[in-house]
Image (cartoon, rainbow over all chains, first blue to last red):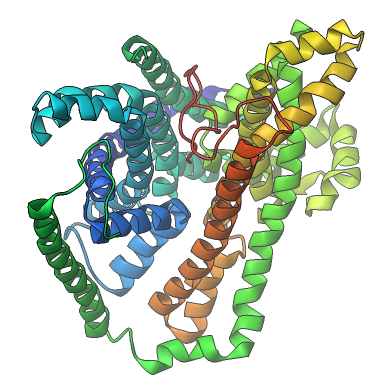
Length: 228
Length: 329
């Protein structure tokens, strides 16, 4: 029975585990930046006054929100990369990393866009009307009146999206980029025999990544909340 | 959309703005068509529009033998996991509201732990650990308990035990992961739903002499369930989407039908991928629509005094965040 709670495989292979989480962090950070960019772009489309762009943005977001991440990544890797031979880098590992990051970014951007749009919707229309009536131009009212309020309302939802994205890096690990922590866990299960201590080691790793992020965004959202 | 209303960002357009919008519309249409053409040409260049690649999809045999069994497995896993996750959610959601700390605290720990875990490593836990660990348990003092548990309970999910060696089919591992993760999220939804019922309701119920149990059963839960229905349905969309993770542990689901089984027979991965994507998106959109429709109906409903937990805001924020965030996964 003692072997059930034998943590030595975790401590002996700590460097391997940490390398896995380092890959997770590399995926998560780059994805966060790209998803924010794509998401802002999609939101810009959706709130634009041009019906065609509005519809397109709404359609893309709706499509991505209803597509499983595994499907998005399978399309990226198996269909576009392997079958259509569209590559992002000539080095195989780098290529798969970027496909994984790109797939996860595109998927996450739909949720980022939802969060941003809901943020803009929390700004009462009177604020914009007041800004226009004192003669602020579009850019000025956006910069000084609307965005400062929208960004504050968006912190909490964006935090949730970010945490979900960190958890979703596991799918990137399984489908696209095998250096990621969840893929390393699977590898260790095969090499050393699956055991509960190995699982606990990785579970703690993910908790360390997600919990502080959650506390930080919760704290920030409360601190920055707009009093209305 | 000939006459536009003012929005937060844009005033109602005047003549010059309307002209500008028309020009931008034309430019946008051209850009979108160009994008569509690039995708079309790229697929054409690789010969993906060839008739023989698409022919299997007009053959009923292909649907009957290859695609529909996958769809059936996906829906089966989703249905079993939904029922169990709802059960888990109600039990743990109410347990977290308990007046006894020895129920509240462990339930809270379980819910917060599984909510913070990536779903995939929970699936790996259920799929890889029991086969490796069961022979050790079988030799220990719990060997008999393990055998009884598998033979009497877990066999329903296809788990088997043979001389102390437990094997977990992909279906059971997938359902375990889906239930633990989505059940925990639903537990938070249930808790939020009960807490969203105004305090006056339970105070009035206590005042007329109802007991704790009756207050919950007759007053709080009926209103909470109405209020949280949209959030529950949108979490079930997440669950249905997450069944695709079964692909990773070689569960014979719809995704595997599109990316492994059909292409293995007809060498048409891209067309199969497109067909399967359409099915997935169609299913999820239908469920999402249902959630949105329910939300609108609940908001107008006189049956509850609680604020509706909407599709967008219903799913509780991630662990550690005390504010309500957007539902997503």
